[in-house]
Image 1: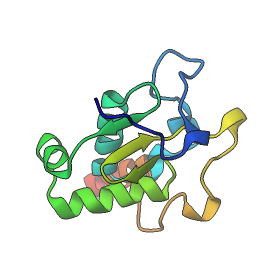
Image 2: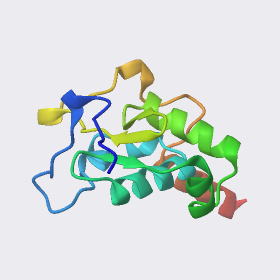
Image 3: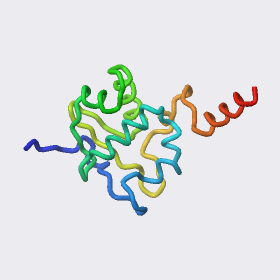
Length: 133
């Protein structure tokens, strides 16, 4: 059996106070607002398959097939999750990272969202505007 060691041992996730591995701070602290649909899908998949320390081994080919992503999309999606501080990756190991404690952000403010990404609110607003045109 392969022994897995956390990439970021100081950020091992723990079950949040609410019932779920999906921490509600993903929404409350606007982490999810910064993610593309492919990034949200990859993050959800990694949360589901990870062990108690947030670790999992899934190859690029398997992830691409399971998530119906081409290789370039998978690479850019993984990079986005790393830059937003939600995962760590050291081939071939993924680690889903803990969010900051006590409402503190784990990610540096300048790395949260890139300017070309839209929040869900912005997307719904745009849909509403397009419907009226």
